[in-house]
Length: 153
Image 1 (cartoon, rainbow, N blue to C red):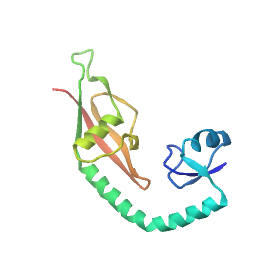
Image 2: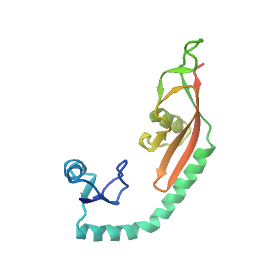
Image 3: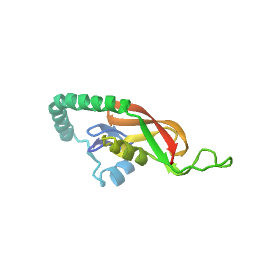
Image 4: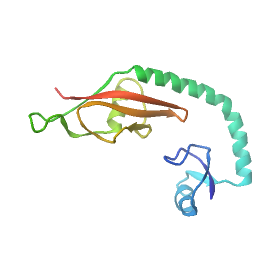
């Protein structure tokens, strides 16, 4: 079944992409949720015209995302969390650091990035140290950002 995505769908595609999915996934999930429409001939023509009009606007959006990416690379993010003390606990955290915590840290630095666009390599963080996250600002612009998890004073 061919569908036109109305919004970004993780692990499937971006807005206005024409994707092929299994019938059940399309009929029972994507279409009822409002995330996609059927890719009929007329819908494809409308999509082609819309994409032509949107193409020149896209260049400015990519330039702005690239400027934000350059600013994010310059940031030195340190996230504080409670950690165990003593020989048995080592550098283990109480709880974990997630993409939401990184999103809050970025917001405090003046850059608002939604948590769903942040992917921490290795999943949730449960130890002190330096880690890397991938931030997707645009479909063409991603940032590899290094941040540090330190113990609360």
